[in-house]
Image (cartoon, rainbow, N blue to C red):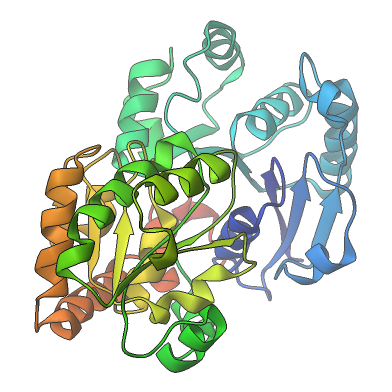
Length: 373
């Protein structure tokens, strides 16, 4: 009889579908039956089809009920665990983890992971108290980078450090790489000439991504890079402000705001250089996609980013348009972009592949003995 596994997420934003699939694939289908559940979000058949798990459940908890004791979700998860008797439960973000810690008070969960994807998630006093009170020897807390792990170790009370670990986000190279459009196809979709040199970035238009610094840096080198373009894929609350900034800097004609694009990573090869200008980044999963696309990378030296990029990209201090523009100009003038991109490709396929993640996961203390061989 196959053992039951639960992967419990907060919501099914694209990156969390990818993460659910990442974790699903570490369990052999012949030996494990994986259920993915989401706390919020309407039932959606198209979303269900994007998953590799055999079972996808939409709890569809009203947002107001995700506060306090979350009794609706707790009741449903208790019933689900009573039915499935999960051997391993992997929660992503605090609220699913909190709910399953409550469930474990009533029903045994042999191994319960709570994976945090942002910094400062557990700074709130009540969350510290809840975890210190509810977490037992079956509980393991993980950050998606050493930076997040270290933040958790400073924040969480009453949990031994050896049970606060790092579980990096990974990328399914076999699935992702074939989905990249060719440089010619990608530029055709973006209406960009093959003769242009393209700096690109993908992310929410939000304060922590700091596209403002990127626009300033691009404006300062534009006269020296006459055939250059800047592509910004994503939407967000700062869209109007950033477009106005581009107008004021007189670079609007050379900056392409695409808005949100589903699977925007497919256009990566339209870029000559990928730039991450974030002032805070717990991990930076999009950097894995950029490295898989063999793009040279300029990224800010913040939080988990250096762990992702390693020595295969250019790391700079955040919020520094002068240094960013200098590095952009350096790569614009470089004749070794392919060699630089190849280094990143080797790093992502070696350190951040699903096979590597399987090896790490099944060798964790408390996990190895649960593997069915």
